[in-house]
Image 1 (cartoon, rainbow, N blue to C red):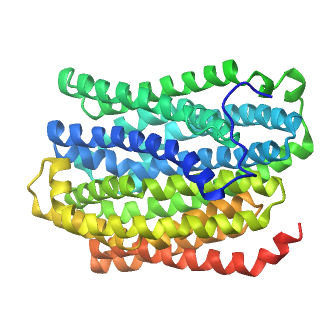
Image 2: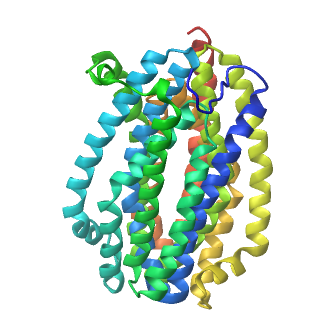
Length: 447
């Protein structure tokens, strides 16, 4: 057995296993959101609203490529976790070798393709001229360092697949501290503008990626692939790519919808871009417990699916959704009572247009957090159980709703239409996934 920390989730109290696994994920995601918030706070207070808008205007563009690559890793991680659940260590090693090979090749292709097109893509998104130069500078630096982001997520995905969610947390805490310090040095002291925020994020990510890789090499020698494991295995590659591409398409279709919606937001002006960016930062922070428990449930599901324990999976999902209800209520109350001062404090602004519209988006989003919880848990769990088409269809429903909103409702009703678009898509997709799961559950039991 490997000498590193692992967790077998196929036995014992299911909810306890999920929560113990989710806690480090939550803390790690919290630190990740903290240093994203630091970028926004420092940029807003030192550089002004236009800098926040410049960073926000690029977020959807970066997401579509990042989510595709991260989705691939999540899919690969499903195969690793299933192998771990089956105690099939030779296949685990081969899967890890395939992760390394595919990540390097695909990331190189994505980077080489994307960098020359960034300016045209920002124009296509109707990025306002007053923030265009800053937006292009920021996103170019981020894209140039895409390999570090992907390798970190690969290492974290491998560790989580074998039940270790604690170690990635330590690397994120280190990364968060480095990012916050460099943000202050690069922006406040050296005057590098939004480029300083991008450089700080990139350097912090490189540290996390290197630390994660070295830790795996030192701590999990029994799981490391040898030269023989890198030999092409047609059946394994097909399994890895079909699972990885399924999750990647699910993520990228979702992100493509966000790009289309961002284009509509960009046409509304810099103030509303700033409002949307600020509200997204806050509700992304509040969404962390939902996303982390969904990720933990996916790992639990992958291991138990590999072990053939379907009843255990369904019972755990029900317990997780009860927790989702409680957190959704808390988030809604907090947003309603403290949303406006939080937005003003984050940006250091008194602009009522920014604050009021940011508050509108924040409160509407958190009021619909429970459907979002159902969507996240079901989508990731179903991927882990071998559903390859249904989650992609749910993302396509999101895409269609965002296209309709961007082309029809936002031009007519303004930012209010933006604020209701995502909550509506969450409800539609959650209902769809639950119905499909209920209809096919018995078939899965027969596997």
